[in-house]
Length: 343
Image (cartoon, rainbow, N blue to C red):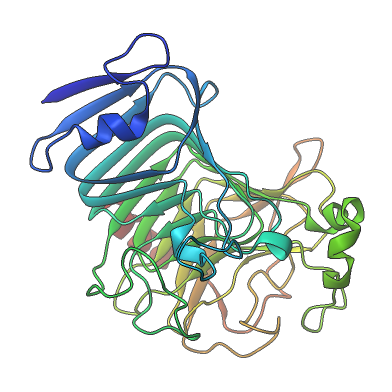
């Protein structure tokens, strides 16, 4: 096992990309990253690599590419060329890190990835992912794009491969579709935070024209947490024992747990806690809140709403969209057993 250190003062390398480049593809390696802010855009494709910081609080990787930027090739950068960190290859382990994309509000800069997770197996523990629109992308891409060059980036021409991913005790921050992709993935004990887009508009008059009414709720939508695109034959996204909430300022019912990026989208939330920002519809259709989505598998079990005094009450599922399923205990157990295989 190759071990390498990165540090601005004392380390084998001063930049993370230099350390990554020094690892032969076939050799397993651990890169220890000292405390500091690393303003780098990292591309990492190795057979078996671990990136480990001192702590998520003080080891920070940050960059600021947005999809609407003009790339050096003269075209818009596009979603999938914005990632602060790209990990590919067979296995990637991330520990004790913060990964940020600071491009800003997606209504002004477009999508902006913090992490593009493309390794066959991804394990992330005590990792903070921060962005706005499209913070975390987990391969594979859908089979076909809806807009020309919509998938322009590192995997647009490759065969789609299912990845298996596990996020433990992580914090993920964003607003629109900020956890998306076609992976089979388990989020366990994670803190999932939706940004307050409504009041961000008040701070930026240039974005005021985007303060619209979406669907039939007649209320402002602060965000959509997930946007799955996997196959009905796979597991999709599973959230277990997570806290799903809006940041301070998010209005009641202004956040959706997800919407289907493709028709066979799958996401299950089991034994999770929520605040009052989560919509009574629970999940939205694509393009309209109450659009019928019969081919999706969006489901919940055992959720509770937590108020400011930490008083818990069961989630009221009576207003959910009709295609959102309330799981039985037996059905939830089956999903839990399948998701445990991702650890």
